[in-house]
Image (cartoon, rainbow, N blue to C red; front, side):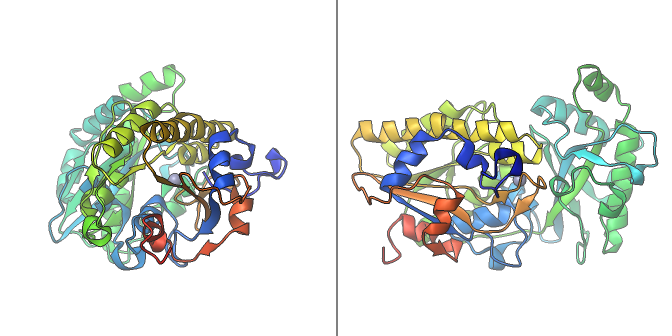
Length: 403
Ligand SMILES: [Zn+2]
């Protein structure tokens, strides 16, 4: 959600442009500040940022993104196992050698779950691909989105460089292929073979005919080994649920000992089931949970897709379809509450990639009017206090931090 000023928006940020009366009303009575969720020298991403937000220091516990997602999907990694994210991606439709093609979508045009599973299964059962995967010790765990997980047995990722595809959209892929260790060559071979098999696969020709982007490649990244997190419940003495569409949040929740509530129709895209997420949060809060975390992915996805209008609409929906009804439900229930609103990290319209600069947060306590009077956006955030260590956020929310 957070961004830098965008020239085509008259130098304003998407949060400033979006219609957000509910967040602004809370901000005016609460506190707006900024917080560094991604420690300096740590790669900016939802993985590192959300670990911080949940009070786990990514400098200490981060081994890579995919082990967190694997945990979210119920896959447990054995010692010696390496996991990767295996995205369905789109390479440009041109007659060129593989390595000279550009990557045009990190999510194969936001491919739908079942279609994505069909394509990844077709690939991994293909007579030319299956033996290569087996030789590599690689097993695929399909996920109902573009975010499949690969687990490789007895492989080393020491020195491996495998860039995130969403940070390189529109770039030629040759220099982006995995490098840095022997195993990288194995991954490169699998990626090239996958393109060869998938480019003109009937499922992709059907997608092209429907005007959709073909899922004509796979992309390994986010490598990591097994990970453990401290118990959130023990640390904060708070019981809570996490409501999200994405395996990463499920994994962090599960590893921290928090409950997960799955919501039908939660897609991680603009069309997600906002109402279902709010209902799940309210139900948890009215039935003994101390807190509920609701994660909305759409503003980030829209930014990666270069869809600025979509990003603004996603922020508007967050306000109208999440913050408004949540606030109303809490007021109706007559329970005192605190609400913390923030984005995990900036995703920049300028380059469609992540950024690790501090993000604005909004903290509101029911029944309290601080008289701050500022709307919720990056400019207000920078006028407020800076929380340099994002792992303090939960303590601040729960008033355990001398607050
Ligand atoms: Zn992102």
